[in-house]
Length: 230
Image (cartoon, rainbow, N blue to C red; front, side, top):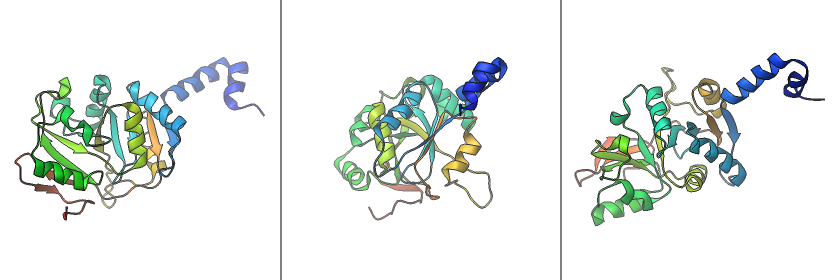
């Protein structure tokens, strides 16, 4: 039996146009298995992100919302969804590994680097002093949050994209459940606002541990999933 889209195209032009409209503006929902991420599906996701799409994706903590760090249009959309001015937004830079540090962070001392090596990849966000190479929209920021999640899906997306993702957690207004963990429910809520939701299985409901390293001494900003014994 031919599908609805084919029938609407051949017999009912209005329905064909309406169906095409829905297909264009509905977010993609893509299943990825962390133990073996499908390269073709990763490429499909990255293509959407490169084109300025917003992505909801799994991490080693909660599901996150993000976009390509090099795409100003996508960054503006991300800030608008969060209800903040882009220049003042406290978004994290989600990197594949520590090799991206020098792109965005001032030179750090040996003690700080060793701490990062012990903790990452892992469920931490480290606030570090930003350098002069930050993307133009973040030039006025003196510090930046760095994430390197221990999640194969996130790693594959960033590796294929070729640069970090600017990211923020997604919250739920529910008084009991602060973070949504079911990707299908996340899709139902966000499909009109983003371009792709990556289903990597149930997420965690505990965010990353946030540690400020801008003064040289670690300062705990938020206790989360990451152990303080690092």
